[in-house]
Length: 166
Image (cartoon, rainbow, N blue to C red):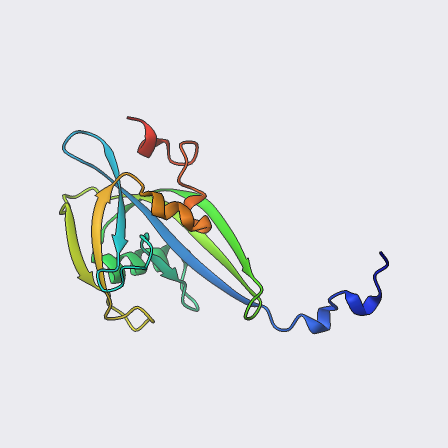
């Protein structure tokens, strides 16, 4: 098969590629049995929405770490969390309906102070999720998290051994 130059995408035909920088928080706490648990949330008003982890977009002129702590506070109400380490950056690319690349900076954090077993929080801020209610809970990573590649990539014993050492 021969390809003609018209068969190949030319740079001028790619259109503008939107790039977003995002953060995701993998927050751990130790339960009363000494086991590590992961903080997750679901949308109580939208049963079909997947289980998620706190996170969101980085605003212009905002550092990655500042965005991380802001998003955690806006989405969960938690503050004063300790960053254990950066897990890495997950890169996602979409082609439809328009070309987009998202760089998701993923961090492992620890909740040092006591936290409830579960709670509901109304998202603060002016983002698209402002005013939404999230239902938070602690536990082992739910299988639904593994349907989101940019989140599930770091949910492995070699990335977060603390979570998998029972």
